Image (cartoon, rainbow, N blue to C red; front, side, top):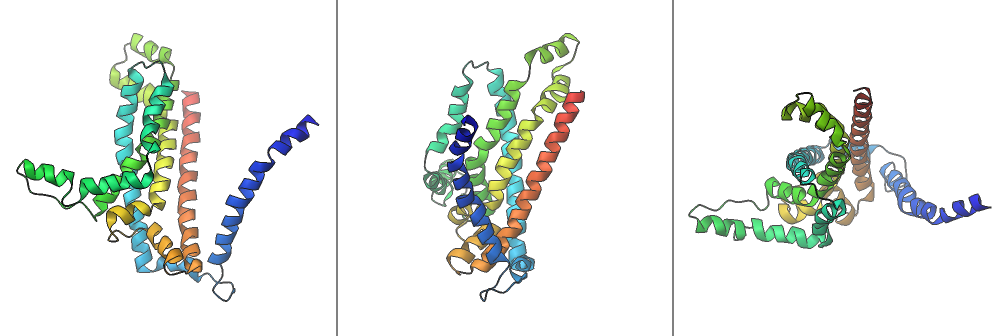
Length: 275
């Protein structure tokens, strides 16, 4: 009876999964594999091969990779600094990371518009210092700035959590045996924190690849990512079949990248166990 009660408590979650995950996925699959007459077709998926769609997809992949690399380069040193500060309340550190996310997403992007516009704060400061202004708005650079700002906490948190879990006695033993800072980092800290690195890469790369709002606001319609193409197909062209077909292709890229990173994570865990 108690077991049945536990299963009953899981009912709302099952309804949520079916209503908001499984059914929408099936709806996307249906529209992707049919035309306006309801007949089966692969044209919607094959539309990704069109030059405009390929260009948008490759640009989205490029910016997502750049954003992920920048977030990684910024997050790992910061996570190490915070870990070495010996802060007793780790929840306070997590609070600092999450705090900027309490602000509305649109407000944060609009703030970057004020910073990067031709008459914005950055250009005004440069002109005050005697330099010429730079054109940042409506460029891929502005989109990357917005992505890094929004997704940086998703990279810092898993890396910081991985670093916190590293046993200090391992590092102390290595130092007692004569290992220097570089050797300790590359032989102990980095291998044991790779699980956090892989998790952070997934958590940043996936939303960056599928993003369209940031490129809309900071790209000014001049930076067309695959997410923008899909959004326009649904909202402007009202072509749900094309939008669903392109969504399936993007979904394949996302699933493939997540599967690859999960495989690398498991291989790394096995290597750490042997080491």
